[in-house]
Image (cartoon, rainbow, N blue to C red; front, side, top):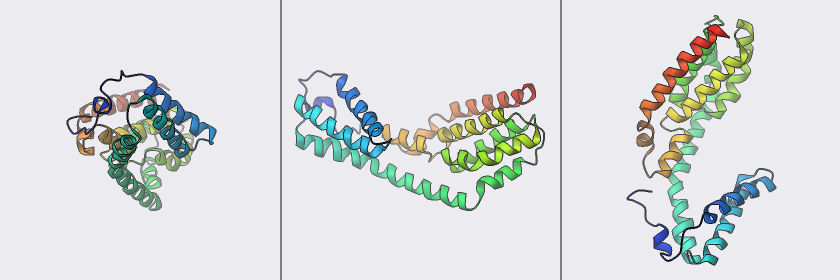
Length: 222
């Protein structure tokens, strides 16, 4: 986790050899617990923590005190700012949804009635809106019921138009400075969200240009 890491495997027990089961078993417990509880991820997390506690303590990797203080609580502390930023992002998205932001943008794109250009326009327009506000999955719930009839009324290929909308959301998740993808990457690498996003901006721009050209060409072929 970089130079700021406060604890690593050797700090806990330098004489114990690493085992892959110590990684995979908690992950299996997470997925299994969530599946048993009807896809409740919180139940899966609690189940994984309990399994991890007994797994690590019984092997002598750490003491119960180390697990609570140096692993569990330190992990909570690392995620506190991430949780706050997620909450702020959700508030922003909720306000934009209440203002009718997505229907407004769709209304602008509907003026381009050419069926060949519609997928390209949908991708480019929502790519920029996603970069600014990062609706992510909420974008699909708000825009799909409008984009699909719009594609049908203009004669554009509905599958290609839906693909353009989905791709714009995926790109926005990677490009927006405060999207869930950027925040998780920043928390995992011990950097701030701005550094995590700008480090890959040249690659996201290349992906955006190539995708836009592909949708433009596909609009005239399909």
